[in-house]
Length: 108
Image (cartoon, rainbow, N blue to C red; front, side):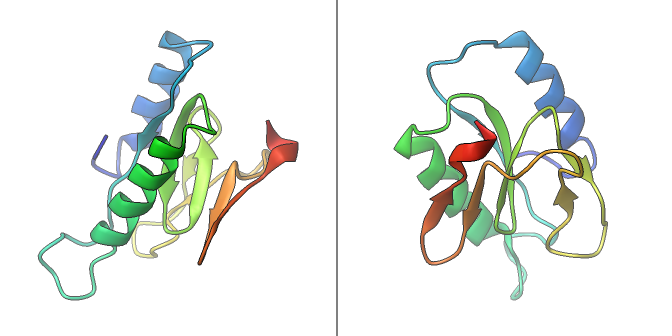
């Protein structure tokens, strides 16, 4: 689901409590800069979010942003001007995306 960044954590938290024990992922994402801009992060975020959702290894509500997949009810918006705009201060990332998607098995 593509979502605005200012309220994404609220939507993710609400969905995580509405849809317990999911058999499929719900991955929210967005971007700091619009898709049409040259240095936009929108395309990268959308492609990674779709790839993670299609893999089906994560079966919960999550937020994907920059390179981090965060649990939906543990995420917090930390920056309005950095590409790494979200964090999960008291919970490890569900996955880290670089050249490969590295699922964090200890956070499950």
